[in-house]
Length: 114
Image (cartoon, rainbow, N blue to C red):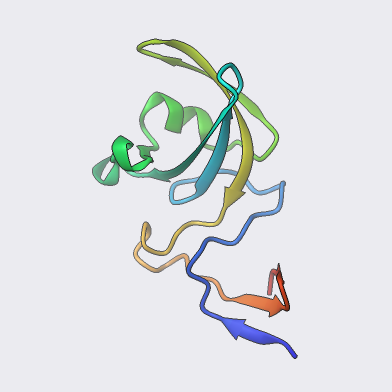
């Protein structure tokens, strides 16, 4: 039986979809081999300590328009860093005021696009 749910966590995007403001992104620091989960937000909502990075900062600008699997090279004040985009999730409704909410169809443990 199909069940429509209010999905609070962002739904993973297909690999063809690109990063935009409001998206949650999992990054791999290529040099340090560490992962970092960030949300891309506008400059008024940015809080680097809460992993909410501005779409106007060097890392945010470098990520816009990218998709899972791509590697970006970013010049930051401490040098250059390379990130591989591991995954991209749809905008978090809390970030964009609820306009990005999309229902998900639950098929047991798997989620599919409606």
